Amino acid sequence: MSADRVPDCLFCRIVARELPSAVVKEDTAVLAIRDIAPRAPTHVLLMPKRHITSAADLSVEDGELLGRIFAMGAEIARGQGIATAGYRIVTNVGTWGGQTVDHLHFHLMGGRAFGWPPG
Ligand code: AMP
Ligand code: ZN
Image: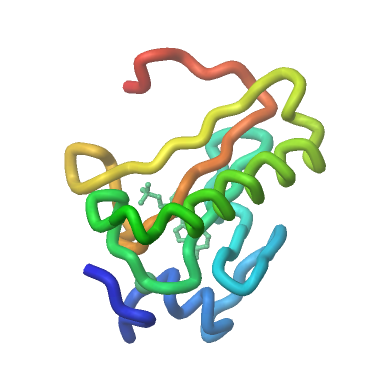
């Protein structure tokens, strides 16, 4: 699903500043916030400001948006000092993918080593 905004969506409400968050960086299309329950020393969520339910709803037209998200992620990683050691960017899709918030977001995690495959 893709609409500008979904009224009862948690991340749409954070984007609209109806709910508080710790903003790390933003531009006109992308918001990066600190995860409220970090699973790594650095754990940032990058999301489109426009509501997109998950990566399953992306299309070719979203290419620029995705470029912005990954470029911002790389910039944040450098700023947080995790770029040299390496980090992980992951997005969960649906129930078995572990998605709990139905507004597309990418987890940028670093500051420790991660196993593969994820559990
Ligand atoms: P996922 O389970 O992949 O959908 O990721 C959702 C993430 O959102 C989890 O890592 C949560 O800790 C995080 N989260 C939930 N509520 C908030 C919030 N109000 N502010 C920041 N992060 C949140
Ligand atoms: Zn939303």
